Image (cartoon, rainbow, N blue to C red; front, side, top):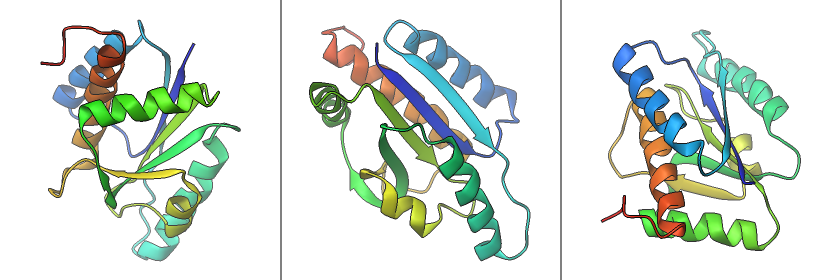
Length: 154
């Protein structure tokens, strides 16, 4: 079974984000084994120090052998079908683990971006990282539903 890990910097605090995330986590349980790892956002006023501390925590949690995908503004914008194809390509290559990484309010350390297999942008628009998590969960559900020939994606 496909295993997907989402490493997120920061915690969901608002109930509306938590409710939305939990709904898609529940829906995804029929398609994959999903794990969401929350890394504490470093509160240092020095952004470089904060990003480096977050980098260490992220690196520690990346599963060995996983295809890694960083969500970042300079990444490639892809559609839902392309995400479905990307996941399918990974599984056809024998990769059963995917690891998506979402940075905090300061983004992601450059070294994290360098070690990832793919850099993905959700949009040219900027979203709060809490909303980005919900959007990613929904898009993963949509992509896996597409690959199964489901009717969710219209």
